Image (cartoon, rainbow over all chains, first blue to last red; front, side, top):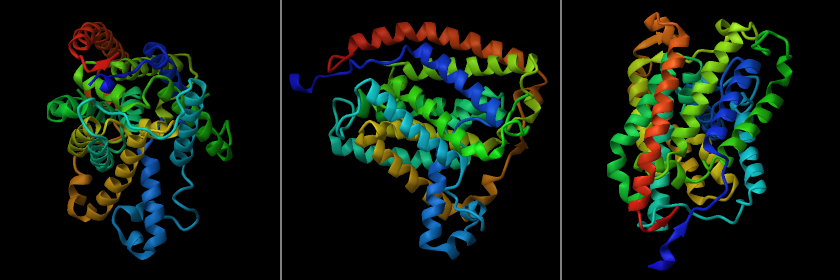
Length: 177
Length: 200
């Protein structure tokens, strides 16, 4: 059982410093672009793009995806796609700097198997992706950037995400503790 | 005066270069704060790690206050920035679904990208899930098209709805956040003491 004990002694930024810098980044982003940050929008662009390659007619007829298809450029030619590419690169940069870029591995609670962790990661992703479309954005675009710009919708999404997380945490406790 | 791109001070051609640069800072800060680990993120819901609360709410109150100062000093015209539209019930339901996804999957979209970047398989699977989830949403869209656009209040701010000045909201959020930072410090200590299988 001793081998199961895992430690989490990574070197991270002080969370309040990280928060201040992230807040300044939101200000800078709004100051330059007039909009906030985002993440789920890039995955949406990827969905629309691949769907439009596989089945162009159906995609353009689709009441949702059809909104994001234009004649003059690919849906991948989108601000959030480039920004998300940056998120990946920035994560890589920080990981390299702090020595956290290693071969593929899994983070999970001590009581579950890797397989179970991955199944729930996919399920969680499906729910998050699905919900983000109703929410007009995810934690980055709606909850963080929306709230920071005093948008009512942003605050609603923020409260709903965290409220629901606490409400349902008990059901998923075996995954994490 | 800001916003720079909408006001034509930076030409729109720089849009994507700026997108990548801002994204790099965003990803760097997420990863450096420990958001590339699902265990760190999920900790906020079980009390063993409140890093999400600390980083997220510090960012919100700094950005709120900062934007008000930028507006006050005449550096930015807040009437020209994008205000997320409010669709009341769809956003509540969407947020609830995202909350379940968060606690089941251990990531949110932006953090999962940084998780992949440093080699987290669970982050990769979460992102694949995001793709599937948005695809399912698109295919099923005709079923809930009416609901999707219901409760449309427009691009409203808290001030538009309540008449209370934005600075009051910034102050209230700051007080709530500071109280939460203080309270969760004790909760975290207590919870960590009771967890034996995991060293912190």
